[in-house]
Length: 76
Image (cartoon, rainbow, N blue to C red; front, side, top):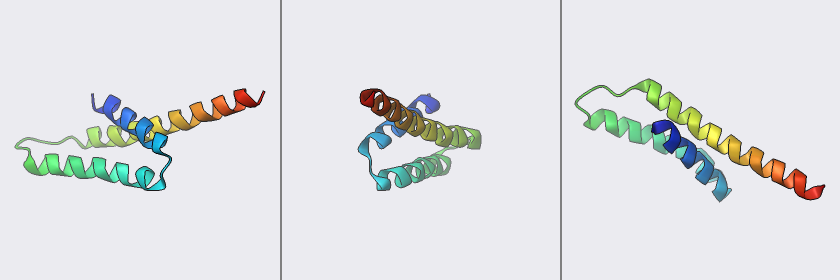
């Protein structure tokens, strides 16, 4: 579920086309995990954090590649 959520956040952040969104969103993900670690009685997986950041980057890359393909097809 974390992977799908982070992927969707990456797609939506790329849709804003704002450099601030590109840079701040991973930090917000890290802050959310830090707050979960502070408030949680159990363990918080750092692997889940790594997967969330990688999924966010994959979502952004998918959006940019899709936009590139659409732009190249519209020129032809």
